[in-house]
Amino acid sequence: MRTALKCFALVAVLLLPATVFAQASLTGTVRDASGGVLPGVTVEAASDALIEGTRSAITDDQGLYRLVDLRPGTYNVTFSLPGFNNFKREGLQLAAEFTATINAELRVGAIEETV
Image (cartoon, rainbow, N blue to C red; front, side, top):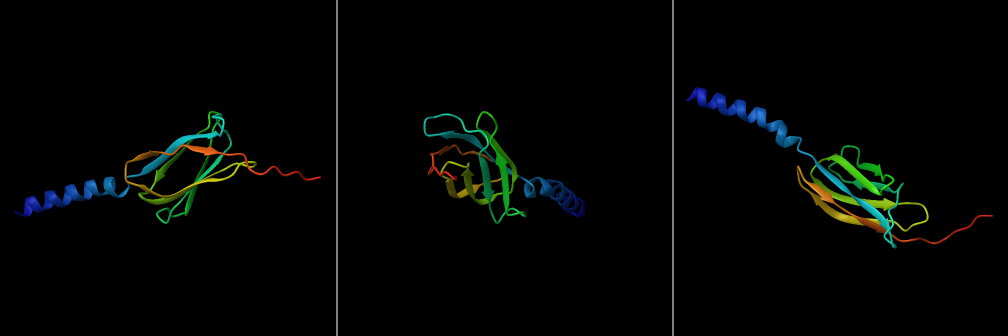
């Protein structure tokens, strides 16, 4: 009986880190209203599940972004680029070991001119 209990305890200790540190990720493409890809868009994922509160990425030359090593929880994701209106997704639930694909379309914002 003691041997079986020790084996169970050992297995539980070995498997615990895998479940505690199981991470999620976000990925996707950001485009404008005409369907063109947008490089340089700031993508921010905010959640109480993150120690730092917010994790961010910048879209590449193909409009792609990837946020990795996110803890499971509820996230608010904001996409922003100067000259465009922000795009937000709120209340996004991320489970452990899951990759969510969140694509965004940014619309041209108000044009401002400074002289």
